[in-house]
Structures are given as C-alpha cells and as structure tokens.
Image (tube, rainbow, N blue to C red):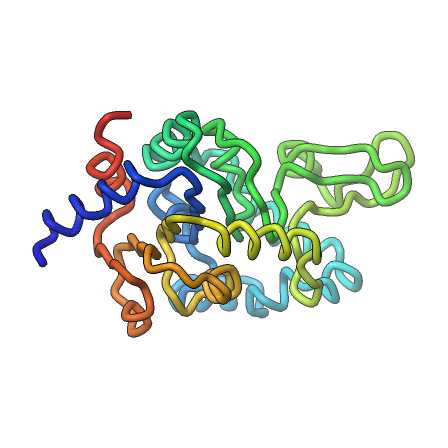
Length: 247
C-alpha cells in the first residue's frame, strides 16, 4: 500500500470515528523545537555539564538532597519558556472541537498542548506550570520558578516550591493511569503521535485495546512498528493536515 493510500485509509477512519484517543509522544515536543533530554546526544551533553545523568538530576532523591543544584538543572534544561506549539497541536485542537476526540494523553510536561487550547488532557507526568507550595498549597506558574535567583520559595510562607512534574522515583497517580487505560480501551481509533510502540505510555495505555485501529504517526522508524495496525513515517505536522483535511 502506498503512502497516499495509507493516508486515505486513516482519513476514512477519522471520518468514521467518534471516540478517538490521541497519545502525544516526545516527537511532538521535538517538532516544536524542543530537545529530548534522554536522547544519546543530550544525555552526553548534560552529563558533561552537570556530572550527572538527566535521570539522576530530575529524581526525587536529588530534589530532596541537593535542591539548589536540582533547580539549576530544572530551570536551565526543563523550563524552556520560549517554545511555542507547532501546527500539529492546533490541528488536534480543531479535531477536538468537532467532538470526535474522546481524550488526549501525554507524558510530555511542556504544556504546549495547553498553549494550543487543547482541553482535558491526561498529563501522566504532570505539567511545568502546575507548581505548588507544599505548606499552603499556593500555585505558581513556570515563569515564577524560572525567574527565581536560587531555589524558588513561596511568597506567603517561604517554603520551597514543589515542581509540578513527576520526578524519577515517584509513581504515576493511579487515577490518571485508570483514566488513560479506560479511554484507550473504549476508543474506536487510537492515534499515537511522535512516539513508538516500545514507549512505556503507549504500551501501558494500549495494553487492553482489542481493536484494529491503532495508527502510529512518527518520523523515526522503530523495530516495534509492527505492533501498530497502521504506520506512517513522517513528521506529525506533515501528516495531520492530510488526514484532517476538512478542519
């Protein structure tokens, strides 16, 4: 089947579906200009710079023991306030506005989906803009943390602010996991965007899916592509306008 025929097939699936689940992978973040800090190149760069791996730097143990160094890393490498969502996010928003999208699920913490106006996203790893004070529970956006000269402190009680992302060593909230699995299990179409079938989010969320409409759209080939029902290798922002042509 040619690429054009595959795209037409997926287009028909979208037209026929009313309970679409969308999984947003790190590739959608990269298409918006971000860097995957767990890629080989970035891991090497960061370990050279901080003398620790990204996993170590963004762990709950490091946050507890070396909060100053944690926030140095967090502000420089995670809080990228100059990023804007690329076109794929706005295409998803338009599809969501038609009522066809049942849920959007992501491990990305960048908040690009929020900037594009996508609603009701299941954020398995949290969001950089949902920070809070552990003592008084006052909320703070990412820019407040970014602007802090050292460890960001609550303006009301002078307590160190807790980043709103899942740190290594912490579990994903059970209620979010249940919502994500249920949404994919009941979907009549799953669009996995900018990811691969080996990704923990994809494996977990689609583990009980018994349908035959799991569509993977991603730039990079992977040996697990065979576990998707349909695969399109291209940038997500190139493909979505072709399968959502009337939006």
